[in-house]
Length: 274
Image 1: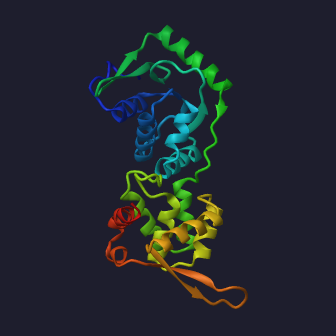
Image 2: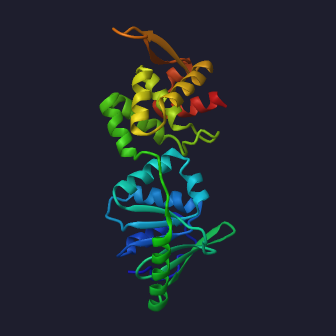
Image 3: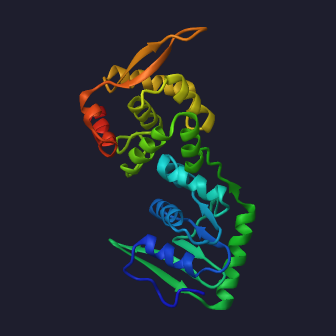
């Protein structure tokens, strides 16, 4: 069933949620803005009900920018794994962002600080629009999302490091609005090393887990460890092993981080890095 009227003076996430809840078949999300992509992932991740599969046709540069945020990308990867999202890139985009269902075409229009969803439900028009974007979908290039699904990250972390480390990781990630490492948030490797230090895990174990699950290479973990150690956020101690060079155990290196609970750890670390 299509939305019964235009969706005016609402937020993008409300528009997306209304359209998805009313849709009976597949949905095409065409030329979404960065905010629209983030809001879709948030809505779809939070909704336990069976939502339709969304075929997202987006500008490649916009997708890359949005998916640089580990929080968004890892949740999007979960949706892809569940068959609820597919990503392809579009070259010739319409002027507005569109949500296209079997029953309606909704144009998302921005006017100053207001957002509206303008609904067209004429059967002939909707049918022609669906046919158009189904064809463009078939011709579009898939977008390769390299970020691992957040469910896999958490499950393997619990199994390979410890349930306590997984709890810390989830809490730290949940305290952040973004995980980019660009000044607005810590990146996923820094977060991993912080909760590893909180749990006094071995650098070898956390970097092997991170590489195996697809977060980053062992070399990236090593470089980031050196940076954090040089800045005093973490410390290391050598742990002898039967054969080969000693391994390094990670430890929190600053009292401010040691005294912070997991909900505050990211904020304190960010302030120190800045």
